[in-house]
Length: 363
Image (cartoon, rainbow, N blue to C red; front, side):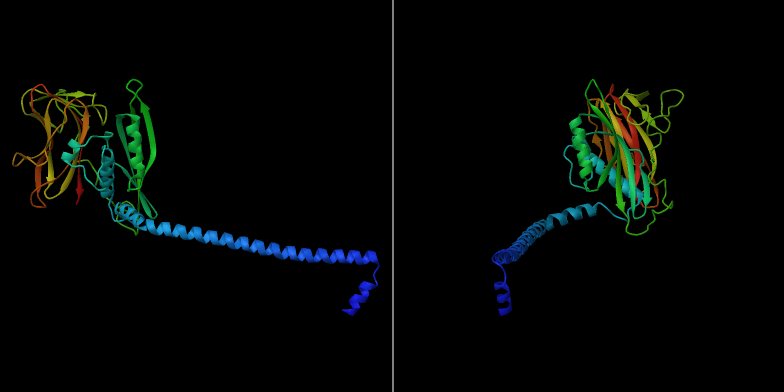
């Protein structure tokens, strides 16, 4: 210390002044750096506290929503199964599209039965459902179906498309084609929808082992494209009390549809089917009626309609009617059934029919 003091005293006045300034600068610099580091550290701690608070709020919010999230997840999970066959995927997808097409759809998995179809006002009308295509990839399957929405207003179409996107079946609109009627200002849509189903393990759907005919339409000449040489009858169809002709006004599948004009009371047109007893079937048919009539499924052996027959909507607009029925009898036997049977009540009434599809639901 004495040595430093003698060294300082040996300096000139100018050197002493500069030494003091350097010392002050060093002390101030060290103090500033220490204070800066302390303030920076405090800021970092404040930011860390804010982040932890935000995380706590987020976790609390997630905990509060966990019940509703779990409920929503279970709703989605209930609409998917790795064990479903191609037929089951197609059936559930068609049912979902039909559910979303009514103005006030019920909950998921609700079925539009015969009576519901008659009483539910349609948001949009689906013209036809061609057989879909199932593609298998590693870990998942995609079922693709293409259908046409009949002319409707743009608002109804937008609502329907939004419902498809929000469906618990996790549907994806892959392709959409719109065409507009400049006179009526209605829009027709061709929609391609894809449903993805995740596979948990290899199943009978892998490769080409699945029966490609599982979804085949049992109804014959269901689009009425074939007509006999007389021009008064359609092959595979029978008529009683009806004058049969081709027409294109209400076509929904192909180029023509059936037109029948009743010449007597209780006229009808039908197709005979040999169906397996104990099995459930779904029948869909597009019908327009000017007059009054009924859509039925008839047990030909007893000449008795099954329960669920319903009056057809009058007014000359075309509607799609869907009915499910289980064929009575001992499993393993066959039953002759009229499906569909369109009965017209009064002479002079006119009925149009197209896009008849009949297929089994579950084995």
